[in-house]
Length: 88
Image 1 (cartoon, rainbow, N blue to C red):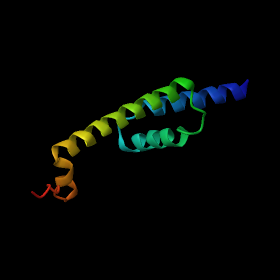
Image 2 (image 1 turned 45 degrees about the vertical axis):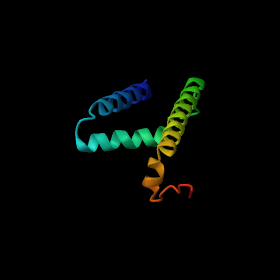
Image 3 (image 1 turned 120 degrees about the horizontal axis):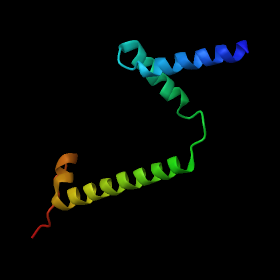
Image 4 (image 1 turned 60 degrees about the vertical axis):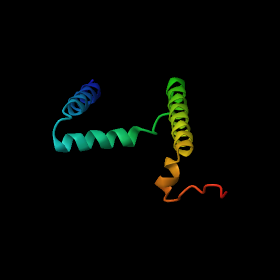
């Protein structure tokens, strides 16, 4: 019974520590815990689907931006090149 009580107390301390995320040492500790546990467990199917949807969304917007920039000639100015106009 003593082991369960100790485990419960550790769990309560951990929960309390996670809720104190307002001062410097606590924020660093919680962020470190987040990054340490990020790849520890296998991702669920909804998490994988959400990541794919997010990636598709970002790539589509990047493609739209690049096509619009290229069509407007802004991309060449940004890259430091001047678009070559056909010589007449």
